Length: 423
Image (cartoon, rainbow, N blue to C red; front, side, top):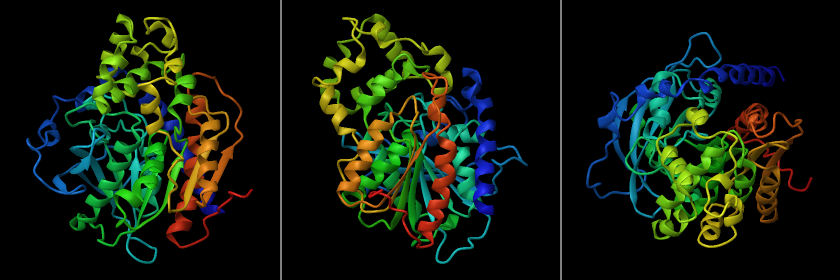
């Protein structure tokens, strides 16, 4: 119980700390931008040499800027990595990320485990890559990275396809994000010089977009990377249905994020690009253009609280397009729940989440349970808070991360999965 309270306190204090960088002006992200010190690292070999997914292409030392004496302080070796993966369009791509190995000795049995972290929404500009923001202390995923490192786990954080590296980030693309997670695990196993054992056991972790990535990696593991020794996955508030997200996100403080979704669709499915883009009026096209270079920090400049009816030629909201082609097929391909994972899953979800609707997560978990997946599903009955501001989405991180960490400790120790599918 004492350890549980300590973890809860750590994450709660971190939740308060994150308010400052989220309110930072757009210019705060600029030092890590495309013209910054690390530009050369993010330019892959052209053409990309032949190789296998997960092959390490490049490494270099990095740093994670944090404030000593706070719950986010870490003592770890930080390394930037570039590795091969398979992109949303099906071809080989180079993806970057960060590997953090704590100096804290591993106190458990067996080799030190490695947790592959899918970050939450960063945006779409190359300057938004987590491996760049970490250098300047602007990466909010410290909220989850720091507690994992404090437990002695090695942590590997993907930047995802197209963040930092050339190309468009296919935002909320199930296959691209799942591949980026799985291939980073493959890459990590070869980085023994950093202190990661070849036989390290893995887990997936993430919240929001990261929760989707964790769930996607779990669903894709058996067909894409069956050789990986993955123990479990934690998925907090995963956007299981983009159709739900289109409804909840419309007129929200992140309504400009529709540009990230549409740009991602266009990048992933270029044959449908012309038809998809044809629904937008000049203001809508301008939002898409602006989104392509924006980070989540830039939301004040992305028409917050604006309805998507402003962006379409016929004045209909974007959500109404998603049941017709070519949108319907693209949305269906991102849906979670249709492929049962073979590993235990922890899912944490605020029932009053104002961005990722609980109904979609319920449906995902229901499908997994019906297929025999072991799922510990925790629904948090928090009251609605400032709807359309995504505060209800953000506050769910605290209980999901605290309980997810305790559950993950148990899984690595070989304990019970906490399956409550029959409850």
